[in-house]
Amino acid sequence: MNKARKITEQLTFNTLKDNKMASEINRDMVIENKMDDYEKIDQYNPKKIQELAGHYEQVLHLVGEDPSREGLEKTPERVAKAMQFLTHGYDLDPAKILKSAMFQEDYKQMVIVKDIEIYSMCEHHMLPFVGKAHVAYIPNKYIVGLSKIPRVVDAYARRLQVQERLTTQIKECIQQTLNPMGVAVVIEAHHYCMMMRGIQKQNSVTTTSDFTGAFLTEKTRAEFIHLIGSNLH
Ligand SMILES: [Zn+2]
Image (cartoon, rainbow, N blue to C red; front, side):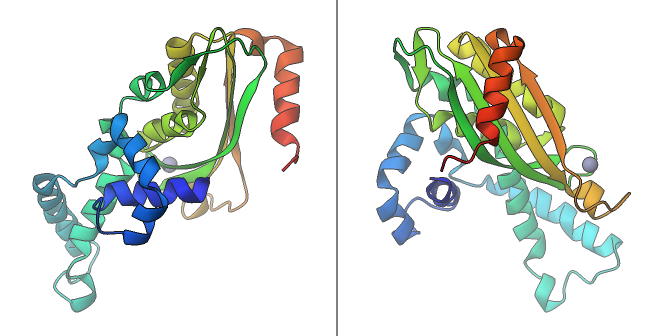
């Protein structure tokens, strides 16, 4: 499923028609994307790209490079496009993503989506932090299409972030939009600003968590922690 999502992201971000293989595999997902605001990222903003590229050319100069040498000729534009992709979450409305697939249902047990890949950027160094999010909620009359939870995670992750705020924003959005009996969010991530610079610790993992409602009780939270740690698949 993650692979399919990645292909779809790529697809919506490049052009919807170019990637033939992906468009065949993911026709349905693309249509689904179009219905929920995800389409906003399917095109680069040329004016912004041009302006960003100008700045990145300056950056290349300033770090001692020659922006006109062959290998770097298109780099400012590529970096500009990459940056626009890495921050496309600003154009998404996470609550709207959830609302686009809410269904009435009597199910009252815990729903967990675990191992959601996270690719975000720390706002202090603009370097990546990558890891996994585990999200759970206990429905209260409404459930949500399962693919929407990773979308909400992405909508907040694809911005300049700190892991703590990312965790809380995901929790708040689900709590406020779905009004469930409780929400749990755990994120584990490696921060490249710690790995590549600063204290250069390659193996440390930062874990953050946030809970509402039923997950504030020890028993429910313990069940959630147990389930995200188990390997049933
Ligand atoms: Zn940082």
